[in-house]
Length: 247
Image (cartoon, rainbow, N blue to C red; front, side, top):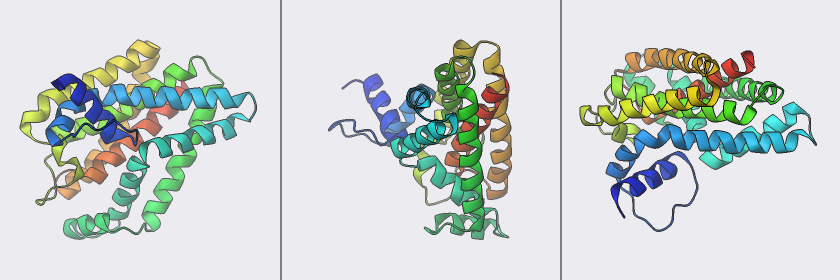
């Protein structure tokens, strides 16, 4: 199988729990597939939106949004939610070393639980509001595309924080910056192509989330897989909030 199909399959396998067949994919495939993360995100967002729109006629908008957000968690294996929870728990530690240790612990603490609850509440409410506006499928596709571009921005700006490596290590490094930059541009292009000038508001929402998570990365001395996951989750949520506010 040639490079482009392998990269696409690697992007799908890395961001979702969808089966990609019996193709063996390695870290280099994921690194090449990073440029397609926003495209995969747009597909996830469109699917989530179609479920929300399809159930909205029989349920209330809030219930339809809750069903759709639940589908996203199932489709992605709650990967980014886990990253958000672990990163939030790390914020409670007093030192960088302790924060990195806390983020590897399997248990979820008070900071992580609170972050998850607030994130899911805001995300669900935003999706429900978007359902009453124009082009909900395009709006969610744009928001999720930007959410998957967000970790690329952090990976291009910071080194990996753990000397022993981890899940997100494949995205960092100088050699990957060209692909990461292309992926970021693709995410912005999808948002603008889907929503026109309105898409720039979603870009701004995602950028705010990236800036916040960048402060965490600075404190840790770099990014980890959890930090990149938190960036994806928060950027998606704030982009959805922007979409809801401009509907």
